[in-house]
Image 1 (cartoon, rainbow, N blue to C red):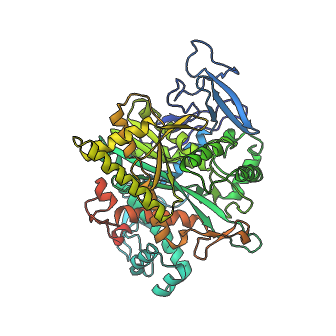
Image 2 (image 1 turned 180 degrees about the vertical axis):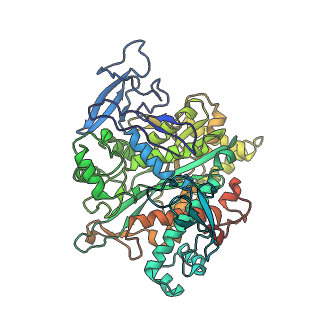
Image 3 (image 1 turned 90 degrees about the horizontal axis):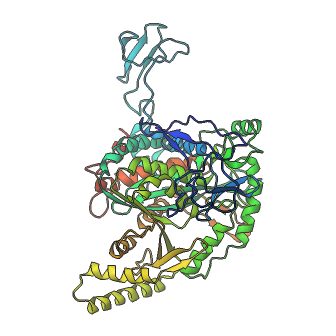
Length: 604
């Protein structure tokens, strides 16, 4: 489990200090994300020296870590400029990343020991059973063991059943099944004879049980994936929260980042940029008193959280970006270029969030800056998957995702055990246009097979991919090379791939095979299932008459319910839903040997 122990750097510090973290009780290690993210640069993975020089160019023979220059994207947004490759890197709070990682790993924390609950008792840290500290004091009506403290005589017990205090536990499975199959809240209350509040109480219970079930099995992931090759798809999805007051009809927009296994469909994580455990009033008061409102973003105590002063500036910055955002009618290559240009004009190239005047912050809990959730997500994946022999990341074209991946898996990338790719899809084609593209691809493949009878079908595909690689186009400020994928399908009718960690050490056939595997289908399929199966997370509709606001009658009214639903559905999707082969994603990965029933998922 992660334990942040390093305090934030003082406001005048040039580089945010390291923070420490540890997985599952392992050895603590330092975390530092402020370094050049260009894998081919000598400064990649090398944080700046303590005394960073203000220099315009690198000195001959200077060591990596020295060749940086401090600068800023604007007020409160300091950055590093790598003098070796000219890359600019926005500074981030390492403590903020560790705090967010701590939140994501909370389900893996061991349950607190059963101790005397009376405040001030000397046995408050002594776990039961322990004959020296506690008497055995019979059992409760539910069958739980009861103990009595030898010191203060307080009696207490440990519940054996998760449903011990529920009035109608028999309705849990039917209610869960209804939620997972798009039944609206009002229909659930009607069909099962329960109140709306009971539905929300049960959702809270489902989330806790699903979280515990998944954590129990996914603790084994480092061993399960050891020595294997994992191909991973990473993408984002947004959810709108309905407004609750007529006088403030603005939406809260919650963003989630998910990663799925391309071969098994297993979803390793689905994390939203929202922390429901915090009180906005408490955090804002503390932020004001400790100087966060005037400090540069990476040196704040609450660097990962959206604070009130951030909102006005974000709305102005986003308005500039929206004015330059023209997407309809673009070719795939033009769309890729436009995405790069939009990233260029951001105040922080790693921050994808756009905050419109029609949006607001959550009324309860606090919203997290999306880039901190991205960094934490990839460090979360690192703790679970770094034992794999090879890791290949196929990611949506987003600078923040790229930076987070290259930071968390820096050692594996330098050791050539991991590679990262951008994948961009064209999604605006009509059904007829998709069919034409697929038909042309099949005709080209058939002609290539006829022209090369000595090659099998896979070898022909590799040959065609190699031709596309030779014709790759250089696009954007960072001169990334994009190759068209020659084999479209209905889900991905247009696709281009960019090899972000190309060190030139792979032969052309190997490189072509990795490009052929490029896809976002596994995570997009999960996203589609979320939309189709979870009524609260159906896509809302915006209309011009509502000035960009969105309303959907069944959407959530509280952001925390989005997190709970996604927690439950990820477990349900991974462990309960079997595909046409009769296997669940968890079975294909080797975590379970049979589909898990909803009652097993809930621990009943």
